[in-house]
Image (cartoon, rainbow, N blue to C red):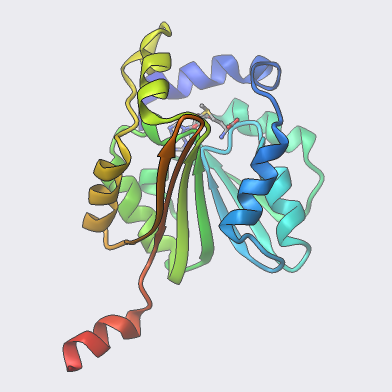
Length: 208
Ligand SMILES: C[S@@+](CC[C@H](N)C(=O)[O-])C[C@H]1O[C@@H](n2cnc3c(N)ncnc32)[C@H](O)[C@@H]1O
């Protein structure tokens, strides 16, 4: 766990909602990703819950959203503003989750990946907690070049945080066992979508 990142985001927690906007396009991105009623979804680096409440509305009472963050003050803000009883809050580094294997239909990393110190461990842990056939979306509303320039302009620990170009992300995800679904990087969007293959698929390949 990065103590420096945890402190950095804890300090920002009280003003976070004034710094970021609740852009309606985010809701449409979640629909496009295929979040549906009854899904179990992991919201990685949930912060103050900018995506979490949209996710809770989309999965409905039959579904569940787990909001994970290393910064407890960010999560406190999220809890304070959210009334859904089908949402759980977990204060943890994504690299060392203590959740069960194969319990999520979908995982979303929105505006968090560059801040994770050990991306390979994070991808392995996400792969572990996804169900076979489950999907991961790494989403940003800027491309990697724009985002990396933005981080470099900031003071503090995040100034060295880097989002890999999408081809490098594809390579990292494939090393963790993922297949690529949709990879798209344009001016205002970084969309890296992966799937955990169904286990019977590798059996079929072996038995041919
Ligand atoms: C840039 S903020 C984005 C928060 C939220 N997704 C949003 O868009 O408003 C990044 C968040 O990721 C969290 N974070 C950073 N590294 C993490 C890690 N290794 N595991 C879990 N959360 C992490 C930070 O504490 C912070 O709340």
